Image 1 (cartoon, rainbow, N blue to C red):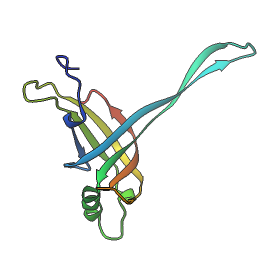
Image 2 (spheres, helix red, strand yellow):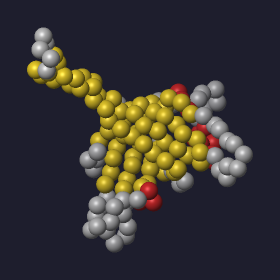
Image 3 (cartoon, rainbow, N blue to C red):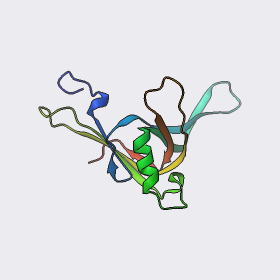
Length: 140
């Protein structure tokens, strides 16, 4: 929150595979660490352990943005075979408040996408799921 104003979806700008997305529909990203309590012969936990951390998410484009991404991939290749790239998410409140928050989603590997449309839809949103090597929530 900046001066009582929360960031809204309109405050988000995203750079995906090196280009700014003009009509982003959705973005999600999360960090999940495998954490478990360790139990011995007692019923209660006596310690805990941290395992691997994974980073996953999804980004939703309108059909024309997705088609532009598909068209940028060399012939015979798929979007899901692109080499790792970064996604930059910037929270830019407004011109009166220059405080910008930046999240850097590192080494993204695209996993899957699906085209789908049904009667009554005014536009098509294609969601690409991904995994990443890391997320820097305090990127400079």
